[in-house]
Image: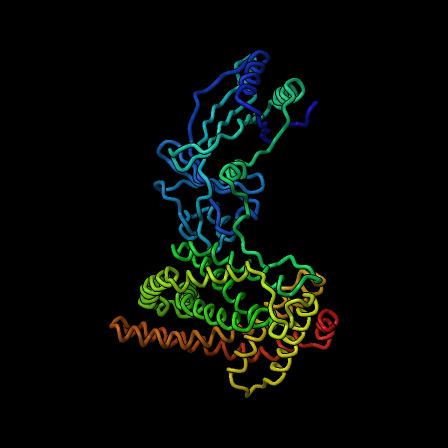
Length: 523
């Protein structure tokens, strides 16, 4: 006897011939009634970095006839939400209110939903009846074809699937049918994931577009080989996100692009004596330019996302007065994005990527006089660089007092970022538990320094926005009043972060933490 089929059971059938045989045998042993076949079109959806898939969730837009609905499956359960029309919302805040929205929103956050693959499903329902002509078991045959789009050209047909769903009160009947399918027809239960199978048909796998932060390196490998591995990965990340940046799909494409640029620059500057000096100088200049041209759009992305927080900072009556600021930011964002797209289409950008790729793929030997660290073992060089960066952070942090200008905290924030990048670059060659603990400790200090810096920049930016709006004739008095009040609130919050700094730094720079750094990196 097979296991009790409390949940729908699926069987993947080898071929159409096998399916015809299965249906013939079922009809000979059970009273079987067929319903007309129905067609439905599915678009499987996820974010660029597979946030739903990584949460074991599957989202699809299902069109049957004239109606379209969103269907979300999570851990064996599902919920649906009808759409007005056939346009699928791109962001969580555009989804219809309800359970589906509440489940998806925290999973995808600010990322947009993108179509992954199209499926055309032909579905035929069958019912097994008892002597009283009552339905005791429901069967469904699914024929799925991967297509280029709705009604588009077929790409590949997946294997037929037979699904069995027991009817409440008729468990014995369901067990008889499953026993027949498995014992007599030798079918094996399967749980095929249509999305995974369809992606394979078009040459993709789930998770194939996700930024890699951990590099699999060997402690004994040459330092130049390791550095090229790090830089190739960052170049891949830039190229992977470039189309989303150009199309302005969501803000995270530009964020990931800029992080890859920053990591590239950090590895060039912090791991010294590995590449020829003229190469380092040239590419540092070019990637600094690229960081500069991508900055304005990213800054405006951040301010646009913070508008709700800004409104919440103010009394309700004043919060509503920030609408002109919101429109100002949106208009300038469109303008700056056009400039960014032109920069990414420029000869300078194309030459940078081509020349950088060519350098990374050409492992010429460097003169030891100019590249003393190129052939040294990675473990030696990385440990020296991390230890030196840590000592610099501690030295600068201990010199900061309550009277020290804010610029010193900004410099310390940059040094912490350099240390963090080095530890993340080389974490695979060190004890994962120990280096993970140190990175977490550093992150806590970085949060304080980052918040302090952000609050200061926001104050200056809001004052600049107010001046721009006045010059452009779009600054109502009450909007300027609200912005002034907001600057005051931000200043008070910045003072709080400044007060917290001494405690945050003290927790990071304890003697116990220093001993951990010394044991791990002082060789």
